[in-house]
Length: 80
Figure 1 (spheres, helix red, strand yellow):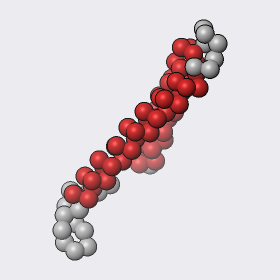
Figure 2 (cartoon, rainbow, N blue to C red; figure 1 turned 180 degrees about the horizontal axis):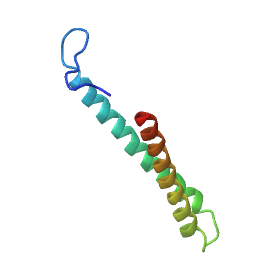
Figure 3 (cartoon, rainbow, N blue to C red; figure 1 turned 180 degrees about the vertical axis):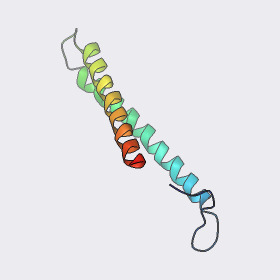
């Protein structure tokens, strides 16, 4: 965790770099999330007519569950 008085080696505030890193990471996550949606849509479009909707639902449910599991694991590591 970064303290509120975080200062870099040369004495300048490190918050600008932290903000840039946060924006870059957030942008990458959004772009990769959209990429995953396109990939799932393409993969499920090759299924028989009645199955793509069910397959997309199952994949998105698994994605949400895995993200929740990752957050819980990270939280457990930070509190231990």
